[in-house]
Length: 433
Image (tube, rainbow, N blue to C red):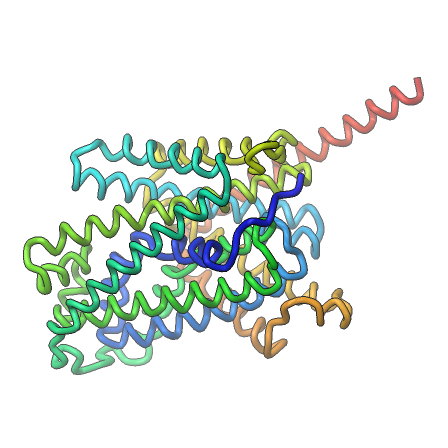
């Protein structure tokens, strides 16, 4: 029940970029502009710094526990199976909820281009990516690299054309809402840039994880930060920030100013190209988390089986895709977003606690052989404080839906534990007889 290490730096970095650059870059840029005006570019720099703080802590933990599962594996190893189960379940739920609005988003944008019913194209996308992941993580990784490269080239082309249209008078005043607005937009930027932890969830399939994972995490965050800042700079430079913030399609609005009537069509094509990379990264993370939980007995052992030819957790991938399809058909985007926020932040908080415990358990010799996050304990304390603050804007719906999901996880743990005990008793009785 061990996965094969086949992913290098380029493939693992593309997983992080693909998970971060989804529909959010085209929608949340307007939200950030509404809160901070032209200073939203500064907000995204601050958000990237916060992401890097967390990323460095995750990189150290994945260096010490280089197995599939991400936060689930870290918490289980440091705080025991019960809390590990709760956090693994939260982590799995966050990715499942997020994947539902990514697939729905792809369906709606693809419908605008082709007329195909949104739900049909969303389901076809998930099935296709599921099959691609079954065939092998190397193929999935190559497709991910290809899509991300096209996505970056198209966005850079948009920036290059847009710079010549920038009206610098629109940047005055630069920070119309003051420091409060900059910080509020930084929170938006932070939530829009999560997804790099997909690299950590795939740690068991990454070559030389001690070196590759830190480089991939930092590289993906910095690349996405530059893409966001470039998009914000051009958008604010061609459309007044008040109009940009009031629009639900801010990048469409900016593209019309730069490219005319063809602008929204080209942006729509970019989004349709970008979202499969996001969905692919989600499938990879969801299936590897399910695989890790099954390997430790939380889910049925079938889901920890690895295909002898493809070296992939086939049943875990099938399970993840099936649940993603159900979520896509039945879930509300607003509920999915709020649940994702709550569950994601909870996993961050417990993972940081696991980081402190891991530091105390690790010997000096072992620590020297692994990646080590700098500025301890200031760095993880700062990251932990920020995560706790980020729980405040989640809202009642996020706490309610996320809480219900956690209760289901605890129930599952109790049921599985009783089943294991029952099997052991039966086995012991057979031996006695």
